[in-house]
Image (cartoon, rainbow, N blue to C red; front, side):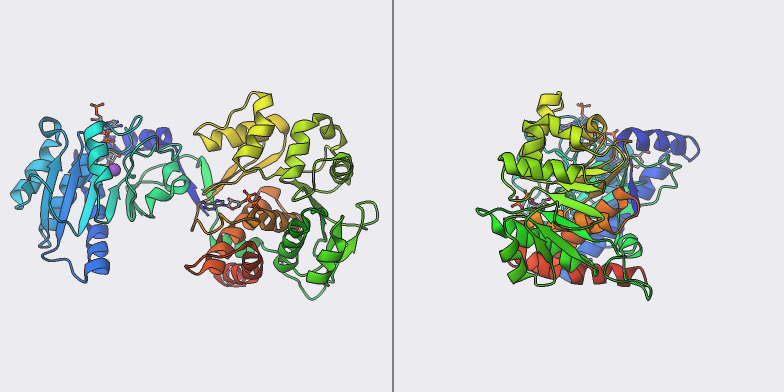
Length: 475
Ligand SMILES: NC(=O)C1=CN([C@@H]2O[C@H](COP(=O)(O)OP(=O)(O)OC[C@H]3O[C@@H](n4cnc5c(N)ncnc54)[C@H](OP(=O)(O)O)[C@@H]3O)[C@@H](O)[C@H]2O)[C@@H](O)CC1
Ligand SMILES: Nc1ncnc2c1ncn2[C@@H]1O[C@H](COP(=O)(O)OP(=O)(O)O)[C@@H](O)[C@H]1O
Ligand SMILES: [K+]
């Protein structure tokens, strides 16, 4: 698990570190880290460092200062460095002098093996100004971003205009929200500045965390003791949603999965290990229910959701289930107040549910997910390229995107099945949902392997993703 800190938190810690270190020392340490990473990227991409060409895009603040100092260190390794000064009268004085001393040039860039983006860092406000935006839109070489990709908001990851798409970002002291919320950050590396940081604002699970938490059968287990997952999904029109959601739960755990609904025949024929019935009442005992994918929004679907919410076990509500909750808020009265409810909306479902409550999605997805979680007393998993998982008390996990292959029909149904299986296995619900999301992201990568995939293939990749986590945890 690693932490993510807001700009405000990092600024406060930096001020304290600046006060106890000699002037310029933190910037030189940061810039040296940039130069080391740049040399690595040059070697990976061009087979060497000496004689390669690097262009620095230098803005008017300390972010530009970092880039200039990094250029100085790269000159010492024989790299040809040209600095493009976006605000020549306000370029960092010591950084520019150091670059010139070591033989770096200032001027107009031509061909580059690597561009170092020092346009703007933590003080970035709003869309990039015209000249910077123009440079960014013409970038052809790979980019190493200093601290963060310019044009992306540090705290929300939103890119309101032209923005750098970095291959690598070298950040300082701590990861900020942009690094886990925006895929434009690329591969993120952190240079240690010895900051004294408070509790992080967000957390990100890693393979070993998931592998430690994932429920594996032990010698004393049988099919019931590992947590039975119940699935209420699918309809005559959408049997596929039932097959995908149930299949994800089957693949995620040993033990048992029960299905209740209209697609029992389809589910049985694809997953013969599932105990399938027509209704929630007849389904038998489960330790968690998931409801919603392909369920429909008619009266019977409404009754199904009410039955699940009142079943006395943790519940995950997705898709049509969320639409039903938005349309018929009285369904909340059926909820067992002692049991956790997880909602897994995509943006449109989020808006459907949140806007009547005065909560809009906006660009700050973390704030929006937290607001809805706190308002409804539920755990909200807000889907997207990066997924945000917020608890009513504010604890929040982020699953950064590892690819965009999950943008395929039915992949949300797969996630719902995974969440159901993780909830049924017990333990801290936030951790369970976070683990399910990690497995989903990883299964997406494995399923695709660099080429288009589909939700059924993501289901089949689940055991491989769980295996990676379990191996990482040394179990
Ligand atoms: N503090 C520390 O301990 C350490 C800090 N470090 C480094 O300092 C960085 C923070 O530096 P910073 O605060 O000087 O500001 P920075 O991000 O360079 O940008 C400010 C300039 O950008 C401009 N600008 C703003 N918005 C813009 C836009 N949309 N489009 C275009 N321009 C825009 C704005 O212009 P102005 O509004 O003044 O005209 C202003 O001049 C941090 O990210 C890290 O890299 C490291 O060295 C490690 C130690
Ligand atoms: N561009 C993307 N990059 C990464 N993940 C994505 C992207 N688009 C969608 N996803 C993920 O794929 C899933 C899609 O879910 P959803 O929108 O409910 O689709 P469906 O209804 O077809 O199942 C979510 O888990 C979401 O986080
Ligand atoms: K930058």
